[in-house]
Image 1 (cartoon, one colour):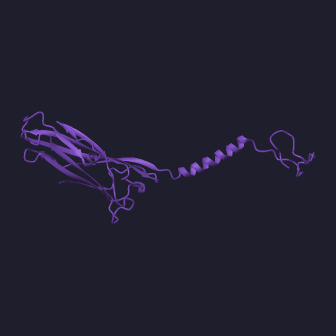
Image 2: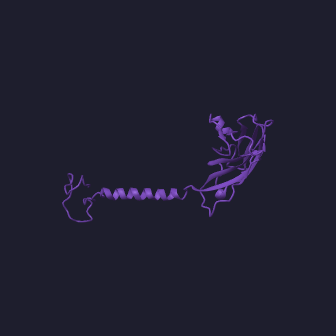
Image 3: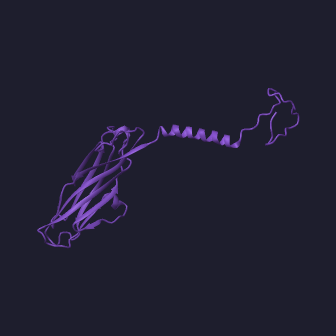
Amino acid sequence: MAWIGSGNSRIHGASSGTDGDSPDIAVAPRPSWLLIGMVMASTFGLLATTNDQVVHSYGFQTAVDGTPAQLSESVPSAKFLIKVTLNALGAGDGDTWSSVRLAVHGTITRDPVPFESGVFVEAQLSDRAALGMAPISALTQFDLGDGLSFFGDCAHPGSARACTAQTTLELTRADAGAHGGVLNVAWNVTFDGTVATQSKTEAAPSDPPWTIEVTQL
């Protein structure tokens, strides 16, 4: 027989015997807090199982110097292709392609010094331009950042569909060279990223498994 609700009353037909082995002895329902505890324990067990597959992450950074540009009246602008090719998976078979940002830092000097103090250089990355963002104008130095997107079969480096990312940097004299002289632009690009992996690693690699190429167009 079964209890209904709480208390000592039984439904019709219940025995009044006190024998603990009697089939008419009702089993009291488990308190609700016990059921909640069982559910929570089960949930924590599932979470523990899920945590065994948690995604670990670590950061990395690498940098490369760009080709110096000389902007003059005859050559008032210069354009460079920055191309990154993935060669292998990262530590712990992690990816080094899904969360990457690049930053370009440039320094501008004038030859002869000084020839004109108010000549600006405009710096622009192609992905920023595609989004309608204005170039950066600078007299002495500039910093320009953007995300970097990879395309291809990145999960299988070395396959026929190479995993690559690229952008272009364009440097332009705002005066189109009308004031003469030469603007020398030295620049470098730094890549910051986060690797995601299901395997714990002792330390992140000093450099991601990439080939970085800078080509003047």
